[in-house]
Amino acid sequence: MARSILLAAALLAASARAASADLIVARGGWAAIDRGASCEAVARSVRIAAKGKVQTLAAFTFTPDHRRWGEFHVTLRRMLRPGASVMLTVGDRPFLLVARGNDGWSSGPAQEQAIIAALRDAPTMRVEARDSAGGRFVDSFLVSGAATAIDAAAARCAGKKG
Image (tube, rainbow, N blue to C red; front, side, top):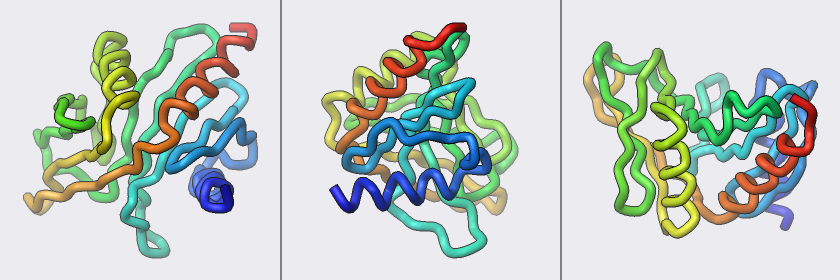
């Protein structure tokens, strides 16, 4: 429980929008956060970034109007090489993400639902890509607590007026 509270505090502090964020629930490596206009299930990578460096974060976003309903997004710790692929692997299921800057995005609702379904049964989750210098890097995430955070974020936004 203390670890979940520390994780939630770190995730809220890492967010540029922390002033407008309310913690819904924190379990394992994930937290559900209400940001007002959206709700997120968010996790930071197992590898903790050095002070002043970008922390790798993964999130599923939900909005009351359902325009974003389970949209997956990962902020990577390094800038991507132009044309690089971002590969999310949940258990043994690979998902090719849409790369922009140092971010990877799900390609649409079908992929988002497949990622969420895979995450409910998977023992592992990792993201890999090539940085601007061509070096390969991998960030791993804890899976414990993901389903709880995703369900809590979706439920909170489902109850809001769009």
